[in-house]
Amino acid sequence: MNIVFKFFVLLSFLIFYTSLNADNTQIKGLDKELKKPLIERYIMDELKDLRIENLKVKNEVEQRLSRAQVEQTDRAARYITDTIGNVFYLIAAATSILIFAGWNSLRDIRRKTEEIVENRLDDITKKYNAQMQALQDTLTQQSKKILDNQNKIYNTQYIHSLWMRSNLETNPQSRIDIYDEILKVNANDAEVYAYKADAVLDMDEHEWALNLSNKAIEIDPEYGYAYWQRSCANAVLDNKHEAIEDLLIAIEKSPQLRDEIDSEVLFENIKESEEFKKIHS
Image (cartoon, rainbow, N blue to C red):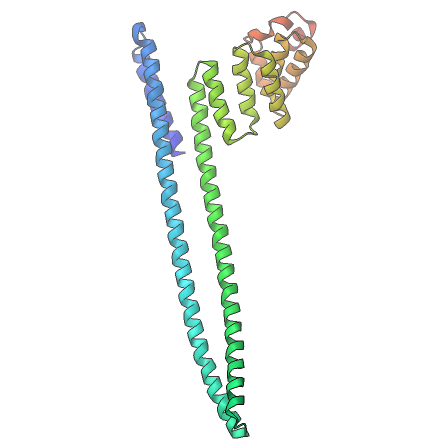
């Protein structure tokens, strides 16, 4: 939210500056070109700050993991020391009992002592290893969740910055390049495919736009703008029946698109049809 707020403050400043210099038509194009590097520089600085914050969080997590492992090791060492001391006390007591009971053979006493110590140490070692493994698994899962959340935050901010750049671009090919960058991060975004189809239509690549619209509808059958783009592509390709059907679906799923019918120049081939007139009326 902080990055979005900063961006809108900067954008408001640029709009205000542009309104003050609207009469100066000679440098209007220059102002427009100067704004783009400023915005891109701002976005790059924000991404740099985000990467630095991610590194700080990662270092903090690693430090916490290290401290937790050291503390666990210290507790285990103290536990083993206390347990071994208790074992030797038990051994001394058991030896005394054996001597009083008549077990005077030093060989038997030694064998019994070794068995007791080995069994006890095995139990302690197994218990310690189990506890350490459980702690390590828990810390690993928590670290993975933290890193996943950081990646999601980074990708969200990055995609948002690309969308803002695309809104500032007037060249269709530049917008297509930006949409391709978004698809590298999220290949299943129906909105990106629909807007890419819109840019492709501006380049008179109607078959390509049709394929992109189909991909968007395949990902999200409820996205009305994808049907709108496919209707535009079909209309230009003179597929009048398909264009009318897609237009009906688009308006059904996104009623606000009805207001855009008059301004859509790609519907020129179907404007005289009775079906189109019914929709328009």
